[in-house]
Amino acid sequence: MARDTFSDLLWIPHSSHRVCQASEEKKEVINVKNYRCMTAYHAAYAPFLIRLGLYQIAVMPGGKIDAGLIHGLVERWRPETHTFHLPFGEMTVTLEDVSCLWGLPITGVPVTGSTDGRNAKGRLFELLGIKEHEQSELFKKRGSERNERSMELTFLKSKFRERFGKLPEDRDEQILKWYVRAYILDLMSSNLYPDSGGDGIPLWYLDLIVDLDTPVQYNWGGAVLAYLYRHLCLATEPGRGSMYGPVMLLQHWSWTRFPVLRPEPQTKNWEPIWGAPSLDACASFAYKWCCAHKYVASSHYKTQGARIPRGQFQSLTEDHVNWEPYGRVYSKLPTVTQQGRPYYLYRGVDGLRMNHSYTEVLQSHLGVKGENGFSCD
Image (cartoon, rainbow, N blue to C red; front, side, top):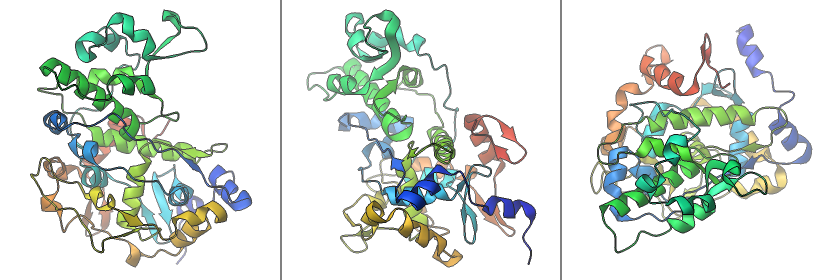
């Protein structure tokens, strides 16, 4: 059966695709930048993180990134459709994946606001306990000048972590909230919305977490998904050789859906204790990938470019895909995940269809909506 013209066009390889050129000609692999929150977590933060919908990602153990796997996925990403083009069709990371894998809310107020941070800067002592004479040492500077004009409204992450590295034993409620906000700022700028350098914390994030007792319910998950789409689109541009953003989410998604370079747990059939100790504080699905694993082929990309992941993705069929990975344990996933269910993609009799609420969520974070989807511009 002849394929339609639009499908044929999308399947044409990117002739100027930096990732494809590098791996085919020089056996290089895309530079994947993965950052982690390094401010120490404390159990006293838990009630605040649960109210904000950030508990599961906060306590999730870290892991190492397989750059070859990410490279293989970037090669198959099409900015025209925001999907991965695979031998049997198209797939993409959805709100369901974000909610189930990381336990992030996918409903609520869009994560938007003024990015100059000037409002928060005037409240640094109130919100973080940083006195005026201490501020200059905590902010990134432009060039060699060290004065008010050169001060960026971005915290220097290394200095910030030094100051808020450990919650004091002798503390009151105000000091506790200062440290909770500091922890969340590091979490947001490292795990959820990291930039290319990974060394800064935008001050405007502080405006999102002013009230910790009755916080605004933000759509953290929708923003993470939009941010991932954005950086997948950027990674396919000519002249770019790096990928950043929430890349660990992309890896968790791939391992959950495909057998490509999927590691094996050192303890056979290991899984978290789903639903424990409570649905507010239980493991999200990505905890499945946070135990000690055997990485069978992940190191091959260092000497063979992206040949192995490329070949494995090219060999995929529909039978290799785990189409409904979360159903078996869904009732034991976090409360915040179950609350987002009306916003998921769902499968109907005529294939995979999109819930209208899903399009609204992405539009609020990605911006421009065109006839064929959302713009990454």
